[in-house]
Every structure is written in structure tokens, then in C-alpha cells.
Length: 272
Image (cartoon, rainbow, N blue to C red):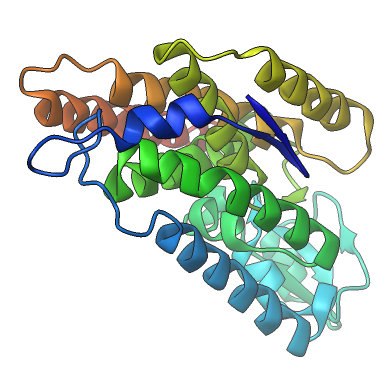
């Protein structure tokens, strides 16, 4: 492992991923990318674009925040973002002036499970997550290929959202790419173990992030933990799939993970 400004590099992970056959495939079956930073750049561009849209439409009080951030259950908010009324029913909210009903996942805003992972309000939150993505993403894309990396990122984000949906307060808004980023951390750990790399520095970095997650206020441990566990499982499917019919095994494994996440979300919705 090699120290870097925001964490670590895994030369052995990248070297193993870059090992090719005549078909220019990575060691885990993916097509070797000519530029392993492309997907990370695209994801960063989407995140920055959403942030800019929020900034120019009011920042924290922007209607986009209420539409895109993950809210477990709908709540009655003061118009303009001045606060909300806990446990106020939708029907009563709609009869009052100066307030607006903001839907949550349990009452139909299911898209928030995905859009929340691309949503930031504070620039420091955006900057930290995008810096981590820029640092981790190209290493993993080189190791596993572009399509597999994108699947890893998106499914890790969904795993984080599913954990938030189950274990976060029903009227607490959650947003940010941290779940997906923690999934990348978990995936890099799995790849490092697979190639026999020194994982001690990864462990130290994960410990530091765990301390930050569980000690600082206003940080979603649910999203971080869900994303990390999702990344571990997804990466294990990708790098430990049998060599024979590897792609078939990988697609089946990722499909199963996706189905289990959807089932968990549906099961949670059934409790309301």
C-alpha cells in the first residue's frame, strides 16, 4: 500500500487488474479500460451538476433537496424550509397555509433511494466525497473493468440507502454519496485480500473513517455501514467468481444482490 493525500493506493490491486489476455480483459473478466478515470469523472460531473442546481435554486431551502434527498416517511414542512411539524398527517398538512407536504419513500417517492446518493448541499460534503471517489474509483475500474465498477458503485449506493430506509428516523432527511464511496472502500479491501496485498493501511484508513462516522454529529452511520457491507459483498461476487463462465456467475450474483436489496426495501415499506 502507498500513502496518499486522502488515503491509500493499492499498486498490487491495479497491477492485477491490468493483467490482460489477448482480448484485453482484466483479471476478473471486465474489458480493460483505456482510461480508468472516465467513469469516476462522469459520476463526479453528475454530483457536481446536482449540487449546482441546488445552489442556484436556494441551497438548503431548494425544492430539489426535498425531491432528491432520502426521506423515510413524508413530513409537513414550513414553506421555504423553516422547519417541519413532526408526525403531522398529510391530509391535515394540505389543509393548512404556509406549509407543504414533502413525500418520503414509504409514501411513493421511491426514486429518493437512488437520487439521494447524488445529492449534496454543503460544498465540503461534496468535496470530500468526490475527492474519495476520484482517489478510489480509477484504481477499482482498472482492476475490475468499467461496467463492473459502475455496477459496484450504484449497488453500493442502493445498499446504503436500504440501510438508511430501515434504521434511520422516519422524518430525517439523508443525502450524499458516502454510501457508494464506502462501498468502494469495502471493494478495494476485498481486491487487496484477493491479490495478497498488504491490507494494514486499508484497515487503518477504514478505522479512521469508522471513528469519524460514529463520533461526529449529522453523519449517517446507516448509509456508511450499508454501503460498506454492500461493497464487500459485491466485490466478493466479482473477484471470487469461478473462472469458468465467470461473467455468468457475476451477473447472477449481482442480480441476486439487487433483488435482495429491492426485497428489503419492499419489506420495509410494508411496515408503514
